[in-house]
Image (cartoon, rainbow, N blue to C red; front, side, top):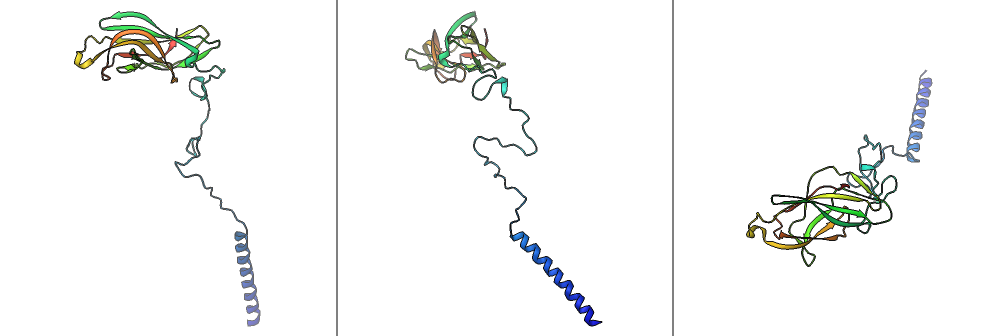
Length: 213
């Protein structure tokens, strides 16, 4: 009887040992971790946007129907400085104020578009900026497509330097408006003679986003 029990026990131990040896061999032979190693937070590859794994973008449509390349969905390009001629159109006067429009005329042979604000300031005889650049008046910023020969305009409000003391204003002659159209680093000078304030803390100009017309 003792001999039979010993034989059974020995057989059971052999089976257990064989099973343990088989598991160790499978793991060492090429098991792969199941947890993926994502890039560390804040170190996403250049040109990508880091988003939460649970929130994925649902659309690639860009704002106002335009693409990052500066064209509309229909392929119309954004206007460049070379595509337009800048002019000024006086509209009205009030006490210590003058109102008018900076007008962009498309002189190219194809449609192009503008959106939002450009840059406007007074310039002296030497072409240098005089005083503060125009402040931006809040408003809607539509994408304005300008056909060849068509126009877009930005309303410009000017405050006279007259109400300011000479000490505060530091009067200086301006002979032109320097105009940058939206998203451009080149500019155009438009004849426009006024007495401006050289003090950059005195703001005499305000302008609105470009609209059609």
